[in-house]
Image 1 (cartoon, rainbow, N blue to C red):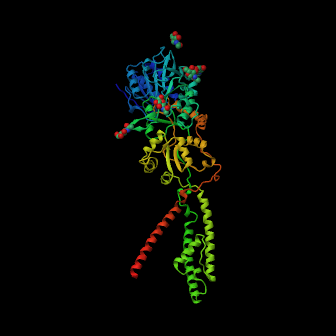
Image 2: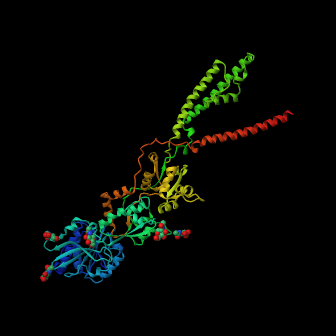
Image 3: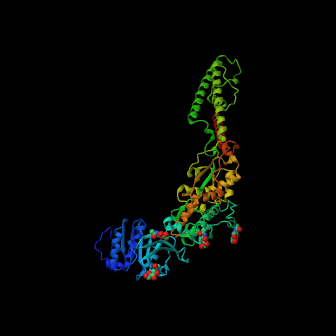
Length: 621
Ligand SMILES: *[C@@H]1O[C@H](CO)[C@@H](O)[C@H](O)[C@H]1NC(C)=O
Ligand SMILES: *[C@@H]1O[C@H](CO)[C@@H](O)[C@H](O)[C@H]1NC(C)=O
Ligand SMILES: *[C@@H]1O[C@H](CO)[C@@H](O)[C@H](O)[C@H]1NC(C)=O
Ligand SMILES: *[C@@H]1O[C@H](CO)[C@@H](O)[C@H](O)[C@H]1NC(C)=O
Ligand SMILES: *[C@@H]1O[C@H](CO)[C@@H](O)[C@H](O)[C@H]1NC(C)=O
């Protein structure tokens, strides 16, 4: 028979009290315990009581302050559960078929959070935990109340096991008597469940850890070699207070990668966690969508992230230095001014030539500017480039024009060269995004870690993909994955960007860089969601306890201590400008290009002249 009663706040009058005296106290206990949660509850009952007794239970529950719904069922079904609300299962072990009901509930994981159980034990027995519960995993995330009557008083206990193979731990919740009602124990009143259950009594808790070097295990506590496995070492030390908090034995299993989904199966730490071999990862993990199904992210112990670090490259890596000193409007003005001067000079020279022709070769004509466009242009060019000239203009007006010409270009030249000197020593701050990085002349490299290799190789969006294919692993050359110190030393020597864990990278930078080299360090993130979090296995019965322990570590400053030992913050730039950089070929590139084009043009003009000469000879014959 499956009767199904749902009643919301129904008042029911005229009960046949006499017939249910035997269960009256049981019902009062149930009601009082439910009341003590101070929360709405959805009660799912599996009881073999008389229907009048059940009716009485339902009515009493319905009269409570917090809304309650009651369903009496023979079998557990998902549809009976209220989502989001607190469900409480109610069973009486004296009933037949309870074993089956409990087994089904266990297979559906109803003994874990957030479900509550209220088990009515047989009256006046010595066994505080009924034998029906022996095979059931009631772990620290469960909430199972067992009520037992002794004469007219009741004891209500919470029971759980630390793990499947441990003995029962019995925690007194409250006592109940007809006279004084529910008397809750002070321990229960003061602490939440997770805190009360944090003592694991030296039971093992397994951590899966990444180790890439054979010496790491010996160095876990000393932390002497901070460049090797820094994430694992800091994770290990950040978990030590957690293990002390929960009084558990630390057991490590080692692997070589954090773990990614490869062809549908997990590797590394993720495989240990997904198979339930471990409860905790040994270090922080990067947040990804796929991992959310296996991991519960709990705390954020290490504010370090993985980014490209680079020193601001010289300005010439991004711009043509030789155009920068003047704004483009100034360049246009100079251009038009030159044209005006050429015209003025030409008019002058022409005028003067006519005058001297009239004076009949008084003087040597080789010193006078010939009124030809090419001669005048060469004259102006020599003024621009601060060269003298053998020819001149003799008249007052001509001299005045020459004076203006040279004076203007002296000032322009002074401004220009002063500006170039400054620009040669300045750095570019124009690299702000990954696209800038891709299009810059910087070389790129990455720290050789499993996560870098994974995230670079699996990058999907066009810019990240292009960065990997063009800059990190161009086809036909060795992929640029370096160990931390090698990468940082390259960063010191040449324009280079290195993707690595910032905290460890700055530690190495502090060690190897001169003060002035610590200036102008920039960061750009490549990996999305690059701030790693501490996590635990999703569905772990210890989740709440771990969470409290990890947050406690953060509150007590224990994480910060480890971070300060293992990692460094971005170094402060104290002596910017004290450095001196030699001019490199890159700086002179536009000039060399100009020279090359000039030479090519020269050769072409020569050829044209030779051809022209040949043709003239041909016609003159
Ligand atoms: C329960 O009652 C019986 C008899 O009435 C008595 O002998 C026994 O001591 C009582 N037990 C408790 C725990 O009070
Ligand atoms: C409640 O129980 C404690 C001991 O657990 C006892 O000292 C106290 O007197 C009890 N209170 C009532 C009202 O019975
Ligand atoms: C840790 O567990 C052991 C074994 O049960 C126990 O002896 C010890 O007192 C516990 N330590 C703490 C601090 O609770
Ligand atoms: C690390 O130890 C393993 C097994 O002991 C050995 O095979 C391996 O060569 C060692 N690696 C290094 C770098 O020493
Ligand atoms: C994953 O599958 C692809 C194609 O089926 C195969 O080429 C590749 O080797 C597999 N990778 C692993 C690690 O098994």
